[in-house]
Image (tube, rainbow, N blue to C red; front, top):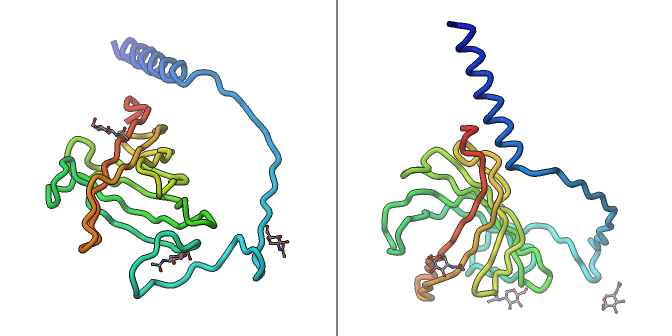
Length: 179
Ligand SMILES: *[C@@H]1O[C@H](CO)[C@@H](O)[C@H](O)[C@H]1NC(C)=O
Ligand SMILES: *[C@@H]1O[C@H](CO)[C@@H](O)[C@H](O)[C@H]1NC(C)=O
Ligand SMILES: *[C@@H]1O[C@H](CO)[C@@H](O)[C@H](O)[C@H]1NC(C)=O
């Protein structure tokens, strides 16, 4: 009986493992050699020191400006609705002309069906566009091995309070069975 159980478990494990591997598809390898041309002097500068916290109004288009965030994330549009996650991370204005920000952000689920799991959002965001898209590069717990993308659209902005509500649609593939 015991050995039957072990055989059954092993078969089940192999079946799940094979299924997951099959879903991942074949691996493709690409190699490349690239060169970053990095100017750190005072002419045509492409890299600068991150300045300290600003005391004036935030300027998101200033190259090198760095921001740290811990936004409440809600399941409903309304301001003050119960947060299901926090958006914790940072973004740095990474285009010389201020058009793009580099986002490194964790969506830390604190309530609801995904509580205890996280998603990692990382990439270049065209911050002046009405809809921005950034990659989802990973996750934890329920979202292990997550891959996908997230869109961001500012639906509401109150300039007096400098308060924005940004809608984000997240699509991910992940191996829920690994949980
Ligand atoms: C800086 O950029 C300008 C415009 O692209 C170019 O004409 C100039 O030679 C550059 N200066 C240096 C020191 O590289
Ligand atoms: C923000 O920074 C950009 C780039 O340095 C500059 O052109 C712009 O005037 C600044 N805006 C404000 C409101 O300070
Ligand atoms: C995000 O999803 C909402 C609800 O389905 C939809 O109305 C909106 O157009 C979507 N936004 C983008 C940028 O796809």
